[in-house]
Length: 342
Image (cartoon, rainbow, N blue to C red; front, side, top):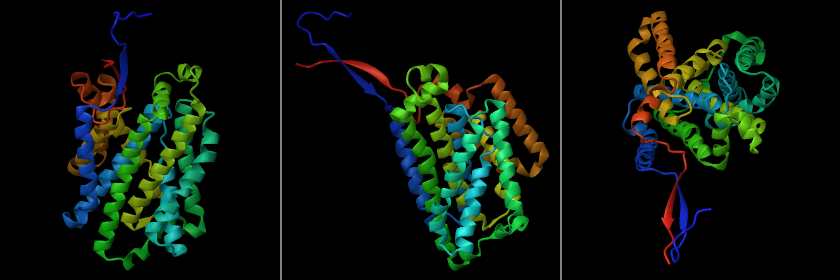
């Protein structure tokens, strides 16, 4: 027991979570969201589509990061929920005549509902078996979409109702949806990690057995993260395929989305929001500059992922944070002692 000098007040413990770098990053994040909302007034249609694609990469990678980096669930089948939400959007808007912008939010019910039985089926698997199981589920979804007549089977569907809106109206809608997607996936993840559930999630990431022994409901928390990641990927799928105006089984359930997410998180830094942003920017620039080289380009990306995994397991952000302790999205709690004033 610590003794304090006679006549002096005992110190108070204060918890600090925000940092100077975090405050600066928060301001920049708010400005970026405002910039996304205002895109129709400063960017051309082609630029908006490029930024929308980048936002999709960030959102999908962050959902995969929450699954693998914190919940310990390595999935290679998140495209199942992207395709399910995308098809739900097209059916609601094209078949039932629901406003397509309202249909985006209604379409999120599809991944939310489908994620429940999928997790109940997959949670019995562990490690690589879980990853293989998620890929099998995505392939089942693709085969089902390829054979359902009311989804126009393998021919796919077009979102012709969007012709009722002008190009400017579509740009405004895409800009708002981009901002919403980033707020939900990045902002929502940051808020969750700073909550009491975030403490439990970090403890579970470090040692799930020890976390369970301290009262953390590991099974329930993993289920929550799985469903939330499914809904987040569903939002990405709805926004992306609305912008494409067309969907078919190969594109809706393209495993390339999982490859992109894994590359971004592994290169940028797993279990960190900062790493997702860095990795997404690297992938986006590389795809724009070297995507025309086809198979050779993918080989280079794969080798880069392996090299980073071997030489810097915490990714680029891990190397940066070891040198400079300046997190953009601080989630750690720092205790400081302050003397009680009389």
